[in-house]
Length: 178
Image 1 (cartoon, rainbow, N blue to C red):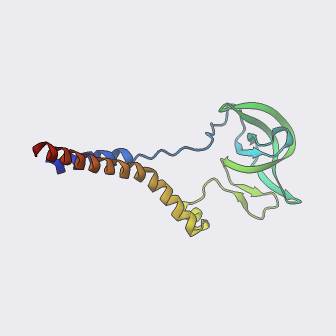
Image 2: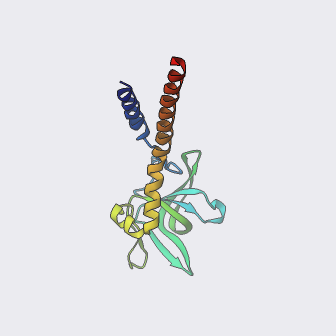
Image 3: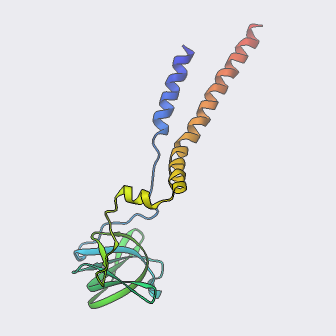
């Protein structure tokens, strides 16, 4: 009977512990109404908006241009927005071509190629196998271990607690019988 109860408790704990929530560092909302067809979300390196998450939209596909080691987004006829309190705030619109410096690209709705046509700089549809191939073996093992241990540590703690309570109860019953 005790084995059945402990097995049931362990099964319930396993079901609960298998849920491991994963959250993005910053939630990126959808582009606002009125934005253009092509868009990219990135960290800005422009002095006025340094470190802010920006949304750049354009009528034409967006490209990357590298000059003197500086990466710049190349847009023609664009609108851009700043992420403030989880919402896009309209900043400006230009008809001419702009080149904005950036640090990191988070998302885009199309492949962003180099302006000179030498290849793709950023693709939103990277295959999982490609990402794993680019990671070192220690990074892969560490990632798996972190995800596994997030649910395993509480499970082991509860298992030890259950065994301790069962042993303590048996000890107290033995003391009361003598």
